[in-house]
Each structure stands twice: as structure tokens, then as C-alpha cells.
Length: 328
Image (tube, rainbow, N blue to C red; front, side, top):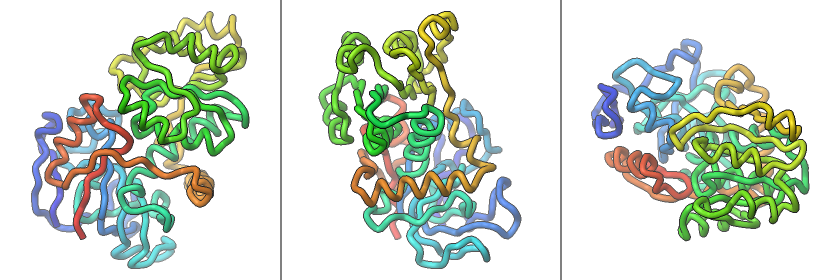
């Protein structure tokens, strides 16, 4: 099979398309366990970019095939997995996804709803499971509350907007361009403000005094203003740091305003809790069936152009989910 292999931590340009044997179960699966998937679409995310430079917390040994999210058809599956050849699935693989075939753990493999194609399926797990985990389980979002979403045109951002709307919230998107505003509105945002303008004051006005929840996958120097945008009992949910720098919190702000900063590290949390992953997947399936959730797919590239896809993300040019098409 063909796969993209990284032999040195030199960034996206170090990726090489190679022929190699079909994959075996990885270190996080029991020997003999796994769902073998013929990949039809592989997602590209910011953690993939960091991983090519050795900057992500999960550091597989070199050489390795990157790619954590795929959608495709089951080729074979271990007994008791619940899957059979020909099943349409989406899966979280941790590594190995940027290839024609991959082995995924049964606990992180999910039936792909009929309403979604493979490209949409490739963008379903990491972003949407993260969004639900962050908003509902970590952020305690209630119907009618106001949610402010940074990086609202990206994969996590558009997912957060759709999930928040499905949970009955009012949404405010923070974006930087007209094109990204269009994407945020397509994802269902009720209001849109610009990151280079007085977005904090606008968000406070639009929400009637302050938002209830902030979803922040960006970090950086806007973090303090995110705290200031909260109303009493507001929650700032930390999802990532695509802005590069990791902000620090002056905890007196939390004390004086009775607000909270909450981490939402979905992947590490659910790895040992397969029942929770299934529950989140069931909730998202319901939202898909209701028409509230449909991953927004942006740029699409063939497998051989994965480096170009990663550069698009690295340069903050991505809209929605960036996907690699893998021919069947």
C-alpha cells in the first residue's frame, strides 16, 4: 500500500510517499485486536503539523506515518469489535491515517452516518467529539447560554458552533476575514465579530453583559480579554494553543468575578473510557440525524500533497476541515 512516512522531524516537507506493507496493530491496541480500514479520506489537523516537528505531546518513534483521523470501509475486523467487512466507518487512529489502509482500535471506531460522505466523516471525530466534550461535559453548557468561539472558521471552531447550536446555545464567532466570516455563518453562528476589532466589547454587548462560555483553541495574547468577556459564573474552556504561546492566568480575576478556566483534553481523557466515547458518538449521531451537525470540509488534497495541506493549516489559511482524498 502507499503511505506518507516521516523519517525525520523536519516539518511537513519531510513527508515522503512510499510503498510499504499493510499496517499492524499499534502499541495502544491489544495484539490481534483492531479494525482494518480501507481509507477513503484522511483528515489533516494542527496536531499533525506539530507532530512532524516533534512538538506535540504524543511523539511516536521515527519513522512513522502521521494521521489521526480517517473515514473509509472496513476490510476486516477482530472478533467482538462489532464491525464487519464493508461497513462505513470513521475512526481515530492516533497515527497511520495518511495511508491507503490503517488499523484502528475498536473503541475509537464508529459507524459513519449515512448522511455523511467520507470526507465529512474524516472530520467528525477529533473536532466534534472535542466540541461536545468541551461544551457539555467540561463547560456545563445550558440551553439559552451564550458561547463565544475563537478560531471559529477552523475545524474545531466550526464544530463548536454547530454543537453549541444543537445544544440550544446562542453563538458568537470570532474571525479574521470575510471568507472566515462566511464559514462561521455557514456553521450556524448567530453573530460574528472580528479578531482585529473590539471583539470583547462587542461580545459583551451582544450577550447582554458577558458570555457564559468561551471556547478557545487559540490561546496567545487574546486570553486575558477572553476572561474579561465572561459574565459572572462564566467558563473559559481551553482546547488548544494554535496561536503558539501558552497564556498565564492571574487568578485574582477568577476570584473577583467568580469565573473559571477549564481544560478540555478530550483525547487523553476518553482513551481509557470507551463507554464515554460511545455516549458522545450517540449524541453526535442524533445531531447529524437532526441536521444540526455536518462537518464543513474546506480544502481537499490528494495523499501525495499532504505537505501542502499541512502548510495551509500552519499558515492559518484553513477553512473548516482540511482533508486528503485517498482513492479506492
